[in-house]
Length: 198
Image (cartoon, rainbow, N blue to C red):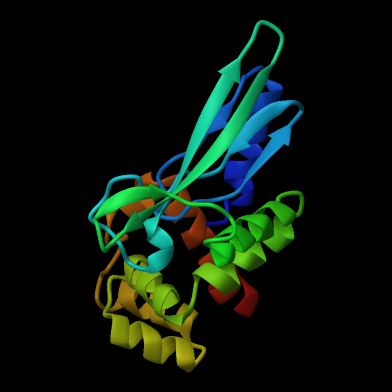
């Protein structure tokens, strides 16, 4: 649910260059929002319609209503929940889903601090399971081997071995390369797991 510093910087650049509003979409989770130099920036709408529900947080959806006038742009955010009991989107209020709304507040609170954004992505999104899954994309090996090598603090050696011995040179999924959000996560993993241990 946290935008990477690069995505945030790009959205702010669009605002500086004259965009009236910037609305991002792709991530499975609803993200935060801000008004930057009078321009609404919405960093992620969530799934809306999908068959990829990897956790309850992926059932939330953000809608944005833009109200245009000759001199300004205003916005209203609407939040929905894909209720599994009836299999449809239902409108939600803050008092009904306090944990979800607290997470949005938490995202918004660190938008001005790139270092905190990276740390939140690393510590909250990249739980151990996700970290090892992303590492399989980097080196083409199995989840189990990635997990063992991480526990041994041998991630850099693991990457070298996969390249030199097993000739695994490519990232396992084009989506990891093409998608800005996934690519940002890969960069953060590399910084934290490989560069920091040189």
